[in-house]
Length: 459
Image (cartoon, rainbow, N blue to C red; front, side, top):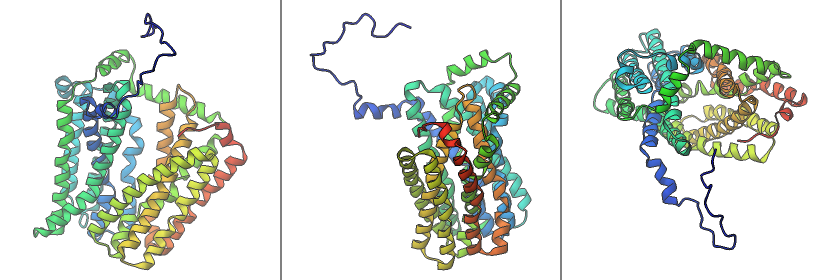
């Protein structure tokens, strides 16, 4: 390829050099590019529904008197986020009747799945946790499935629509807007339900209108999709893979990725470690919402402290985790993250003896979110280090994160029954103890030279 500077006179070393570093104004201007703004609003649409089938729903259920055992089982509702890689090729391969013809391949899927998401949220809004937990579970599962599918489409749209020089800005905008969407569907909904109750509505009706409002906010993403333009890469990719089944493609990629991984030394032990590393965090985190409500904190306390203060602690913990991962070796960082995220559960055990005290809640939430974020950043660095084959990087990472979600989605499903049987102080003490298997595996893998074989790890 011919260099873009070919034919130009060489620079005089003695001449003063003009800096090519973009100014602050130029660096910020990229965030105002139409394509980046589209990704920003789609990020908001992706982050909005996550809590509606998760933590926000658990608060609604606990306020409605649903028992802790049933609430714990609702961790299984997150299954679509774990398994979405299975049907991702279908989104690539299949056209949506009418929608694809009217809006294009990616935008057609975006509009279609967002309409499904609105319908699913409205269906969930019409349920009553006190009378029909089964219908609530079905509605939540539909919301999670539509939300996970939207994530697939938005990720594809973002990658295909942004040129290389705008990818970083687009991803930064996406993540920031995703967090804002999550905040609105957690703290925002709780404040909104309180406001609806203040107008004289019953609690059940207030929750219904809170979810109806969230369904309406999905339209922000729908309008964005309608105003956007179809990525040119989408058409080219479709032509290049038209002769191959998308489902077969992902199956072959998954099999190849696991075959390559399983030939490594201590591969099965490493996979078990992937499943269990964040289990202590997930086990206690599943019950955080009902725990706070049970102690007697108000819905607004939960919104402002657990979600507001907790978000700030998570962001700070993420930076701290990045610092640790740069300062120390991978295995040392994993030890720090593993111990911190386990011991931090004792803050909740202490909180259960304090009672209703906003400052104590803020402290416990800050400790838990801060240490959990440290563990997450270091864990992501480890998962990235495991994906060393460029032929299977994307597939291996998707499958490894799916395995990592097993602890959150399936192993944590029993947390409600444990809390119900033992009480809150003992439950959070037990949640520290469940970290023991991952620590044993960490020591075993370290002794076997597993982490040293991965080489330097960049965060």
